[in-house]
Image (cartoon, rainbow, N blue to C red; front, side):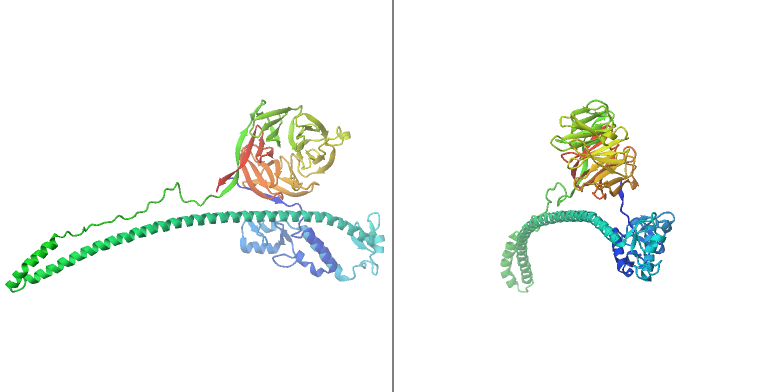
Length: 601
């Protein structure tokens, strides 16, 4: 079985483990005294200030010498090294510890702090150290340092340096920080909401697990109680049979014993009479003894082979072993597939983009056939929209008009109404710039409010447009060619995927990359990432290497790998969720439908 995993490349800067908030703390403590900041620049192994810090994949940093000693002492010659703090493994280069990346940024910060410490201990910070006795009344914005009047003439003179009064500078930069605070507070609230959502999901998960455990225990207890009841009933019956049998055997043995004792006594007495010397006595007793012998002889002895019926146990009729029940999990199984290579109804030639349309239908951008194909979720052809161009991607606006948005190899995005007639079309640049601007439109997605997003791989942007008339609202730069786009309606994050790239960007609504997904197949980077879609549970991506190796991967909204849903697809392209929760996947000449089913584990 293929093993699917991923590597998430954080986009925020890390200095060892010194975050932005740590750096703010550092600046504050520098103002109050350098004796409190050493903890931010301390190696967790030697508990001393970093020396030649090396950074691991988990972004923890340690002194090179400390890592050398740690590696040699515990993991010598191993190809990987676990982080001493979080145990995350880092694959070592051929030169082992020496070949790890040096955290030059952290080294620079430590050098700056050391210089500041030296300056701080040398005298009053408000006095200029170059020009004795001069007060630092100005702030050089070019060099970002306080300067005195002499400095403005000698070392920080205009126009190469820009400086202002330190009071104005203080007010200006305090306000700039306050502006940062607002944005930062928004991020914090978002993280708090994510944390709360994760915690709530974990509580819900734990509750379900406990409920399942309780159900298993209750079922087992019920079966044990039923079996115990049947056991007691059977044992009581067996005990009664045993008592009755023992009573019969006791009576039988008593009868035999009585007869045995009588005959033994008679035999002894007859022997005594026979041995008497008196003939008169013998003959007088002989008739009596003879009659007694005849009487005892005439009595039929009890059967010696008496054997009562003994109870046996026959197990109940079972269709199988006793079963407490089953554990089940959901898996995605193909429920239907349709399409073939061709031009007629039910055929495709370059099926690329795909979207779900109400009610219970899907629309496919049939590239080489220059049309949009609309069919039922079961594959029954419904309608075809002929085009004069090559359609690349398609998205549905879930409004009263149930509009379809199509991007093709032209400069105009086309919007069709619920009767599949062209309602209007619009460019992705101002009308005055259409003829002189090169565009290459490949993808389209729709926000929850209907805003249309169009991916332009030529200009490396996505553009946002009003759904009523296509008016341009925003142009947002991206880092990855936007061959496929998807929007998560819960967080408004935009997922950007490039066909020939080995990564997928998860960006905020302003285009800032929040996380990078790097899918792998069998532990190696996937060669190609293609279609993307989102639902409330995360991000779904089609990835593949060569033909027949296509996967569908599921990630959470932060880009963390959750599971591989489908394997061994031929060449997956677009992906979407239908109105009834099925996954629809387009391949060049077909569409495959998958649904979630429960399987016993």
